[in-house]
Structures are given as C-alpha cells and as structure tokens.
Length: 108
Length: 233
Image (cartoon, rainbow over the protein chains, first blue to last red):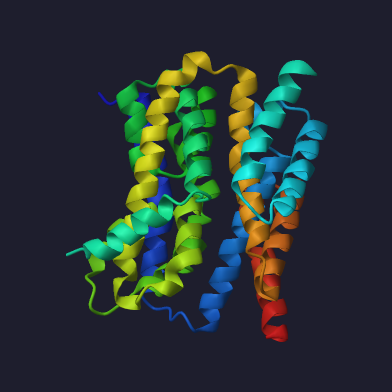
C-alpha cells in the first residue's frame, strides 16, 4: 500500500510536470521571432508577477500570520535598499528576512 | 551527448553571488522544515523536491495535506498554482530549440523550469550559441535543482532550531527577491506593463476567486501588455 504522503507527492509532481510538458509540446511549433512567442513571453512575466504579488498580499502558511502593515513596511524598505544599492539583489533579500524576524520577535 | 563546456557554463551562472539560487535555497530550507513538521520522513522530503521542484506547488501540497484534502483536490490545487509553468516553458524552449539536438533533451530538461532557473537563462542566453543553449540550460537546471534538494535536507534537519519568527523571515525571502528581480528587468514597455499589470491584477482577481486569481490575472494582464507593447513597438 502506498501511503497518503507518497501518493500526494506523485499527484503533485504529475500536476506540475504536465504544464512543463505541454509547454515543450507547444514550443515545437513556435518561432522565437513570432508574435505568438511575444504574447507567451508577456503571459509568462505577468503570471509570475501575479504569483509574487499574491504571495505578498495574500500569503499562505506562516507568512499569513505576520501583520500586513509589517509586511508592507518590509516591502517598502526592501525596494528602497534595492535602489540604494544600485539594484543589488542580495542586500534587500537578506535585509527583508532579518527585518521581519526582528520586528516579529521584539515588537509584536 | 551533452556538451560539457556549455553545461559547466550553466552551472557557474547559477553560482553567481546575486544568483536567484540564494532565494531558491532559502525557500527550500523553509520547505524542508515544513515537510518535517507535516510528518514526512527525510526520504519523502527529498523525493518531493526531486520530483516536483516548484516552490508554490510544494507549499500548496503541504497546505492541502494539513487539512486532509483528497488526492484529486491536491492535484487541482497544485495544477492551478503551477499552470504558470506553461507560458514560462513556451517563452523559454523556442530560445533553446535547435535541429541538431535530440528531442529527449527538451522533454527531460523541462522539469527544470522554475522561476529561478528561468530567470538565470533569460538573463544569460544571448551570450551562448543557439546550438548549445540546451546544454547550457541543462547546466543551470541541474545546479538549481541540486541546490533545492540539498536545501530541503538542510531545512529538514534544522526544523527543530527554527522558531516561528525565523520561519516567517525565511518565507519572505522568496517574494522579496523575485519582486526586486522583476523590477530590475522592467526594460521594455511590453515587459514593464506585463509585470506591473500582473502584480496589480493577480491580487485584484483574488476577490473573485482565490484559486483562479493567478491564472486569470496573468492572462488578462499579459494580453493587455502584449497589445500595449505591439502598439508602441
């Protein structure tokens, strides 16, 4: 008997691989200079942006337990640090984790 | 079979200091800890990242299991959050397709399509000759995938030392990193409007349907952005 955990892993990976597989299948007929390619490119960036922004505004899991005002402050500070460090990606990322941890441990 | 020189070039791209691989590693540490708390064994946790290798999908799986959802419900929930991998794959594979390369490479390496590896390829592919881009991609994919798996192991074993506030800190790394990365690549009108509209419409559609919001928001935003871009091209 396969356990619930193993079956859940298999089901999750099948659901994930199916989109990747269909993507390759579709790609066989698409030229990188075509309009349809540019449309798919827009869709890729917009769905990614939608996902990231959803993770920030309506987070799931443990992040959902943080106050949204605190999350908002962390986001603004991170964007600020991103621009101040000439678009370095490491500083805002590391700072966001530390700031959120400190605010939640000591001020909430 | 696989050109080692280009494969290694891909691996070293994933190792750069500001590579998306850091965000990926940190997020999978959180996943490892989460799976342990859910009652997974270490083998099951490794197996999970090995086979799925997509962060939001693993999160959705964990949340669904927590409420004892049926396998069909898990499938649908994961499918909905991971459908974004479809346009991502279509916007990536045509850049790698070459008539001298065997098809299996494409169908196997599509397993590596995830935000971090995708961004690394998108930012670096132009320097690589088209014929060998697939090997370059396999290098990026293998490196990021192994980082995800080893971070899962690390997270699994450090679960006891991570309190809730630390887990919160780890969980915000992923959205913050990719938010900044997205802002950083807003260079053309078409890309900027895709990203800005997606970021607004995704959460906006949440009020209509929390399950479908990413897909609906993404398709509407991407299509509008496409027409805005074509008009201004």
